[in-house]
Image (cartoon, rainbow over the protein chains, first blue to last red):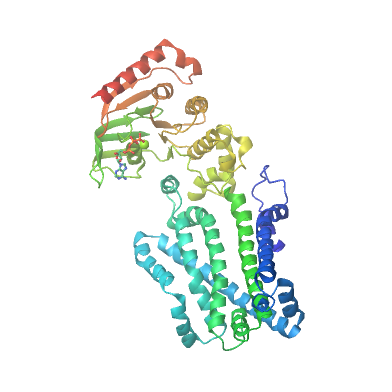
Length: 282
Length: 245
Ligand SMILES: Nc1ncnc2c1ncn2[C@@H]1O[C@H](COP(=O)(O)OP(=O)(O)OP(=O)(O)O)[C@@H](O)[C@H]1O
Ligand SMILES: [Mg+2]
């Protein structure tokens, strides 16, 4: 993560004297306090339900955290495949996210260039968004198989819309006056895009990125869940544990998935704060 | 440098007639203010003068190689420092990097912001942002500068300061612009201008024209002289006649 955020701290073009005095990790820590508190709250509720609500004979329905994690993570024959599957899913989600980001920004840029392009192209994005993904997943499996590519495609379909809509909103967010300044200085279409529209869109692109990242994680779980053939992803294991009623493994897998989602979201929230917060004062 | 409006009418597609048979001219080294009730077409007038919009009938002739425009909102790019906002003009016009840096620095110095070149707009006060906007307008050494109520959103004290600043810039030996200045404030118009045009309510027409004979540069306490009061009185009367009619 250090590598991810360092460059934004060292952009050389301004010696701004008002650089925040707190180091970035201190503010990151302060900002993650609420989410840490929420996680602690969930653990407390989990224990409470396990011990206070469920009778000992029902406790297998929600084994307390230490038991669930102990059984699953203590057993290499469960933990090993679980982390492998998580790694596979993470790779799919990340590739899906990258593809969605590139496609989404490109699509929005094309739309932003004329009201005609927007009118023609926007409906496709809306349709993509409104088709229930579960209706498409089996078809994607038939066409593309059940491995990496097909799973990435599911992620892309789920994550694409927020990228498109946020980027488009951002590209259109520059004020009329700012556009007039460029017009009066005879800016070319390209100059308008790279000097005004794209920089103006950066905060919105980050918002899109955060949402798309979360959705991409959901996308890979859905894909794993339906594409049982081949090496399983974490979603595939969720289904396996459910059918075999391996409750400890199931809860551990759910927890890992959730933590992965939170991690991805937080990474982008942090990048957002560092890039947008610093440059754009939002 | 000359700007000439000859019987210019502007009708929008919505059916609104913003300007009706407007004729005016601005010559070199003139500073002309336009006052008029809200919605009478003052911004439209500037957009036509700048070429951002075209007249429905009549002719607009602008004989100026370099023209600049200052908006009511400073319209700065928030992700760029003050210096880079001013440099934008050079970037768009293909001025070489070294050169445009120097010019941006000089323009910021002209408006008294040499110490704030690296600050981003959000770190500057409203008055300072407006100075950056002025620097951006002056960096290309315009022959004609258009101002659309640039000080309208500023507090009274800052506003008076900015007026002094602008008339000093107008009179400075290293600037060469003629100005066309839109404002709601009668005293601002008289203080800054060599001539004041009074517009009627919509559709906007020019109903009066008052020469302001004071020499530039003008001291701030010019505002307290009897001659000044007499001129603002005349502009106000012309304006009031319009509002009443
Ligand atoms: N692009 C446009 N399309 C349609 N009507 C417009 C357009 N621009 C301005 N108008 C109308 O033309 C009239 C004059 O507008 P303009 O902005 O020039 O007035 P103004 O004198 O600058 O007003 P203010 O003092 O409030 O700034 C208004 O009635 C406005 O609604
Ligand atoms: Mg206006």
